[in-house]
Amino acid sequence: MDKHQLPDLIINGVSGGAGGTYNNVNMDGVGKVVGPIVARMFKGNGHMNLNDDLAAEEAECNGVIKVMGNLSFCTLKVDGVLNVGKSFRGESCTLNGMVSIKGDCELEDFVGEGSFNVGGLLSAGHVDFKLQSQAKANEIGVESLVIRQVNNGFWSKMFSGIIPKLRPELCARTIEGDFIDVEYTTADIIRGNIVIIGPGCTLGQVEYREQITVHPEAKVGKVEKVGE
Amino acid sequence: MEDDLISKKQLLDLTGISYGQLYRWKRKQLIPEEWFIRKSTFTGQETFFPKEMILSRIHNIVNMKDGLSLDEMADKLSDKASFEKVSITAKEIVERNIVSTTTLRKFGESLGDENKYTFEGLVHLFAVDRLLSAGEMSMEEAELLFRTLQEKVSRLENGSWELFFVRKMGVSSFILAQAPAELWFDEGVRLVSKMTYADLIEQLKGKLAYKLVE
Image (tube, rainbow over all chains, first blue to last red):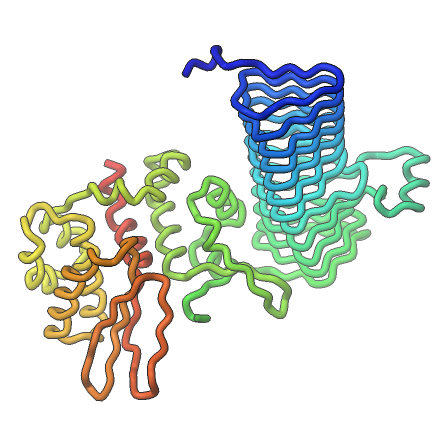
């Protein structure tokens, strides 16, 4: 079947739709879709609720999107809040806001600002993330990981003191990778080839193979060189 | 069971690959999800792998890496069909040291045409050769095993089997079971060796990978 013969799904205002294979899916307003969607291009603005899987070559989400099933894509841009019920798979993801994934997350490039919450394993080629509030992952396995805290103003500093969820930090159980450069991170164990630990880290154990740098303001339990 | 598993840290030390490569290969489905076995240890949770399978798979990946892209490789490795089409000559077997000459000379003929061994036939030959060269089996027993494999394997439903080689009071016997199987023996029985079909083909794939790259 030729791609251009596929129908489009367009939702404006408050409405619903059915799943299926589409060329373009455009949703503005409040929409609900029942059944899995396969689309070449997915665009959601507003409040979307998909109760099954979504597979799209290109996806753009602005607003609040909830996907109950698996989300797979080639490129994804998120401005706002994205909730995924199962796994999250794709090539590259640019995030500006919040993403929360119940299952595993597999990406090649993950760039963004805001926060993420991964229930399973966050496996990625390159992660470059600026934290604005608390980010969580059970396990992280990457080639390179760079975590930075956004320079925040007076008010956010004040709020983060009161509400722990707003404190920009990364919590993970284990972090494994070739190149790890983190700050404001809490983890049980970090294992990597080159490890750079910035300020504000609280780590149980660090295992490295080649090189390590520890900021004087970081709390690290045990540092161990492994291999060779 | 403990001996069959290898921890992630040991694996990286042994093979010289990095965490990044391991996760990348997993993402590309070069290493199946089921091989990641999570267990709790005193340092928290650790990931373990089935030792023989993961070692030969990594060996395969490293050797094939230069000729193929990761996606192509994933197709080839997961696809048993591409190996089943492979046929190999007796000369190649000896040159590549897949099966020892003794085994080949003894059992080669019964597999049919000397210049066209099938993958399935080679698996049987390989299984016999492994036990023989480990010195765990005599020549007569080898014959019995080879005959059993040739006759009985085709009757197993999904083609995946496990082989138990046991001895009791000097009498040896082979037990062929549908995988995954767990057998319990009485005290007098000594389990000399256990082989699984999955292990065997994984190792054979490594030795035959060059055929696919050509």
